[in-house]
Length: 274
Ligand SMILES: [Fe+2]
Image (cartoon, rainbow, N blue to C red; front, side, top):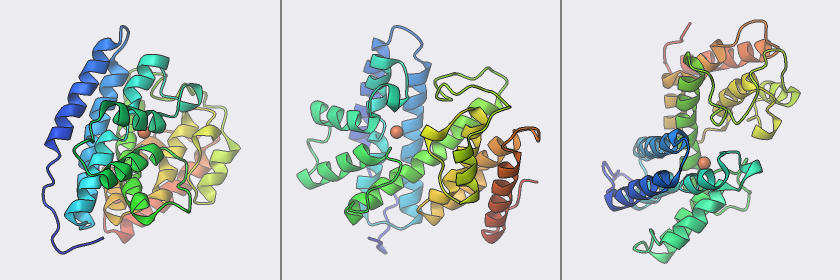
């Protein structure tokens, strides 16, 4: 998949224009608070940029890079319809937004100028980007494209959560997936995931501090060195973890994760935060 002819620029500008106009049209249909939809537009564009950074850093060939960028741009296209219909981003309480995205891509025909094979690959990645884990039977090229999207997605969700949980404003319940900000409780399953170097599951969350830990565990599930480096350089996970006081039941797991991240930074020759 790697090639010496690394693309410095893959043009998907017509798709970008379509996506922006679709997002604007859906946002105009919302009668209430449109900020969650604005957030998803910005998120999609940032995930696209993160994916561009990965395909360049990993020296993908032009054709593969283009598929990754299309999948990154469209990965959350289902979020707009999901929010319009259900006013939540919790899939369990509404719909699977990856599958919703595939239905929208088909109905809107925005991939109609791509080859049949490319359409299938992009839609497969959009449909699977939000699975907890990819099935082992996933074809290698689908897995590669989907993993670029998943890595790029994680980097930007960390930014959003750090901005959101680090600021003085009260939490937007939609952004923290309606988790209570209760400093006295913790999810045993999330704590276990930290010590076993596994990604914690959304379904295991019980409070906002669990969410902070879960975001830190994403470091265990990054597929590309370019992405691991960016994760460490950005420092969003560090900020999220350090903002938990020592009195919370997550404190030991927090310290354990911070030590791991500091060691990874040392290996990558990135200065530690503390
Ligand atoms: Fe998503």
